[in-house]
Image (tube, rainbow, N blue to C red):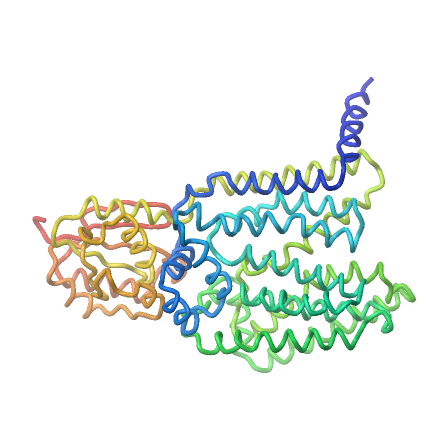
Length: 504
């Protein structure tokens, strides 16, 4: 009697799994779409989204110029977003492009995992991706990460098909799709080296080298424009990434050349020892189809991180969690493989249910965490509270971009406070403020001297630390101009403070 509920649960689970795989994948795809649609347009754009939407609102010629001089990364995404937003540029419309990309990745990952690991693991991989908090997060963000996820998965699928059925169609399809993934986000370029290394686990005669080399040559050729774009870009980059813990560690190593050499040699020795251990442990099975399928996923997961570690110590830190979305498909697929290999049905059902609940809890937490930056609310508050002749000052200067975006969308440019420093009017090219603008107390004082009240809008101070010279210079300039803080209001990720002269 005590086992009756368990037997009932197992019976229902078995009945569910007896549905057509197409139906199950369709349900998983619908699940991803449903989770992604919840509150899709509710949150305000945050800074990075506002940069993408501002780019997409430019005239096409200006967009091409901006991609060439400042935004070479995600260039493919911004081109697609430009066309996507022609009917309208609401938050829902802008983010729906990313949602579409994540939803399309679910059945694509199923097809890939089925070829590598079989039907059961493939269905579990689709479910885990549909419930994954990171996937849902970036399905609801107007940036290129979801598009990169889709294209990376598609490129690996074509690579697997090309090895299984070595037709020119698949090899010549792999090269442009893999290249397009790099144009969606440059981290996608860390995946092809992993695919190349996976060939070590196949017999030499199983690899069509002539077609593979031709595809590799086409891939490199298609990346030439991207090299030019990245080389000519003057964007501010990701120098702020050196402020997190991995970035600080990498920076300390980078500053010591002998330590850099030691770390690299240690890494090479570790890889060599791992290879010899695998060769000894697996023996003849080292170069087999089954070993290759798992090795491809493991290398896809680990190689991008390893390459980022190398770049961190020889160039600059790039440890930004969202960039590693290219590693999400192999992560959920390897988890699916582990679940699929549990032989006891009751234990398997419990493990799958637990992991699904944990993933769903992460999605719910994403919904409940609220928006990271409420620029819509901050813009409305400043415009409604300002008096004629007021000024507005931004720190850091680049946070003017999302404020100006909502200002223009609301039609408030004519009644908004005038920018203090830099003093460019609201019709200026807002993207130029996404650079290294030095805040000097003397200049802030000189520009602030003509205002009786100034609204100081601040955000992203966590990137600079408590004693940020630029922020301190801004406050010193306002104080030297005779302005004192007389009130403030906080929004999500944004603080608005009112500075006024005595009596105003």
